[in-house]
Image (cartoon, rainbow, N blue to C red; front, top):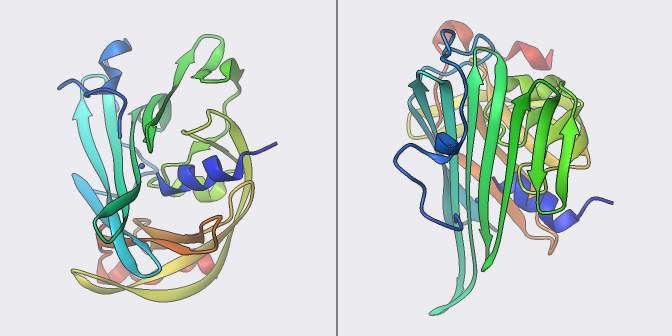
Length: 248
């Protein structure tokens, strides 16, 4: 049975249980040198992508994705902070840090640390000769290949039938279907995006532009309030790529 609250928080993609070293979370893992740093399926030439997190239209946090090429491969760091206040009282705080390591199109590992209003959890996923070993608060499991992660930045997730929930360490069954085209406002101006309806264990709307940049998402929290990850700086397609063909 999927924990709906954890699924929602995984979709939020948010503080770490301890400070992250300068080498990042992956400093505890060892992989051979990667000679194929770039992701052929990845769109972005950006070093960083930024989003505002809104609840009922009001900003409550931020989500930042950073890309860093290293000898081990391409590291992608997703960091979300959220705080809900009533007058001068903080009702809820949540922070999430997740780092993925890729060599070309091959996912090597994911490490995630979460502080959910004081409740701290860690999950890790690492590729071994036995498959992907997931270490979660529920225990250790071996997962077969063929999934993407719930960090959303990779357009390949729209073709996946399973996603690795970086909060729970579980595989969630999902279906991505292009629904419509719409325009989103960014600091670079309006851009045309495709809205994907995500159903299954996750219930969200996720947006990608004509250059496959992840442009945000929207869903309803368990209390019914609308949550939105709104693009601030998340890439902008060339004019020649501005038509979103994946929705056709």
